[in-house]
Image (cartoon, rainbow, N blue to C red):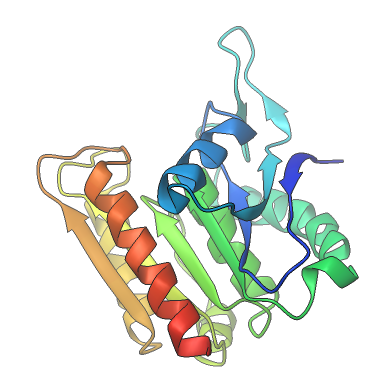
Length: 209
């Protein structure tokens, strides 16, 4: 069972499904979305990953160093429970956005692959991408309606450059990708990125209207 913090308004504002990065917890993405919203109240469900780091604290969506198939399996097991949660009246009839950093960015992409027609947008901040996508997963992306924002720091060495290029190429083929990179930035979230996310969301809401 996943733990989560929820703050959901009973209106038609976007609902953000949020996934934190390695070694963090559900509060990380709350800080991010509050920065994006400035003084606006944001509706969100912020999930805590299931694996607790021994000694160091924090959580992860999959153990550090595990292989691509194991990552897929663990991610998809968690996603099954999340999808059941979303089958709720308060989660329907409103734009729904997946957003995550690092491992959480990977989880956001797996959410779209699990339900290609469910999500209006996915915001992938420095996502991991070990193993790439299968032919079936690439096909699912092509039939998705999701708009993507993909962000990396130019000096990010945590995510191999080859993996960064692969995920960008996969998402570009959908015709629904916005890509941003940030000079002198490693594996981190920066102020310019927060502004880009804010503008991306505003454009998404305007486009939906």
